Amino acid sequence: MRLTRALLACGAVAGPLFIVLVLIQDYTRPGFDPRRQPLSLLSLGDLGWIQVANFVVTGALYVVSAVGMRRVLRHGRGRAWGPLLIGAFGTGLVVVGLFRTSPGWGYPQGAPTGVPTDAGLSHMLHGVGFFVVLASLIAACFVFARRFATLGEPRWAAFCAVIGVALPAIYVLSGVLSERGENSQPLSLLLRLLALVGWGWAALLAMRLRQETMTARGGLPHRPTR
Image 1: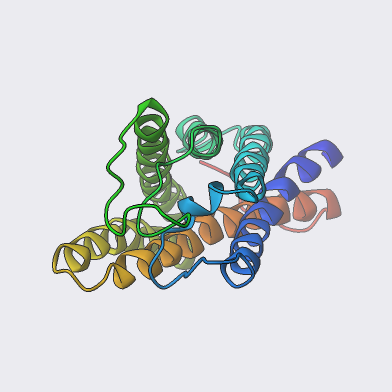
Image 2 (image 1 turned 135 degrees about the horizontal axis):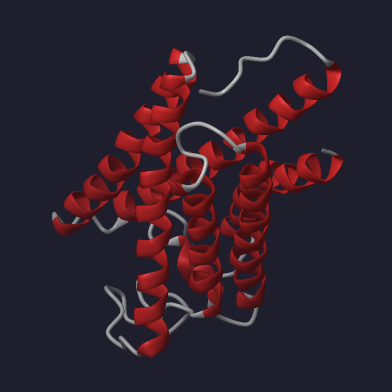
C-alpha cells in the first residue's frame, strides 16, 4: 500500500510541476512571448532542453501514476481503461517532448512569424503525441465520470464529465479564434488553459485515489466498488 501511495503521488505532483516550469519559462525566456507563442516552442533554442525535460519527466510521472491507479482500481468500472488511458496520456507527453515542433510564430529569433512551414518528421510526431495526449485525456475523463457515478459520487462524476467536455471545447475554440486571425494570442493562451485544466485534473484524480488508500489504511468506512 505504501508503494501504491508513492506511485500516485507522482501523478499528484506532475501537473503542478509542469505548469510552474512553463510559467517560469514564459516570463524568463529571452525573446519569448506567451501571449503569441504556443508553449511547445519552449522546446526550441539554447534553453529548449528545459521544456523537453519538462514534457518527458511529467509524462513519465503520469505513467508511473497509472501503475498506481491500476493497483487501486481492482474492481468496478474503469479498472482497466482508466489506468490505460492515463498511461497513454503520459506516454503522449513523452513523445511530445522527444520530438520537437518546428520553429514558428516568430520563435526562435528569425523563425517565420506565422504557422511553422518546415513540417519535418519531428514536427509531425510532435503533433501525433499531442493528439494522443488530448484524446486519451478526454476519454479518461468520461471513463472516470462513469466510475464515480456508479460508486454514488455525483460530485466527482460531474467534475470529470465537465472536464471531459471542457477540454475539446477549449481546443476547438483556440482553433476557431486562431483562424480568425487574432494574432494567434487566443490560440496560445487557450492552449495553456488546456494544459492547466487537463494536467490539473489528472493530478487531482491521482490525489483522490491516493486518499482512498489512506482511508483504507486507517480502517475508516470506505465505499466498496461494485
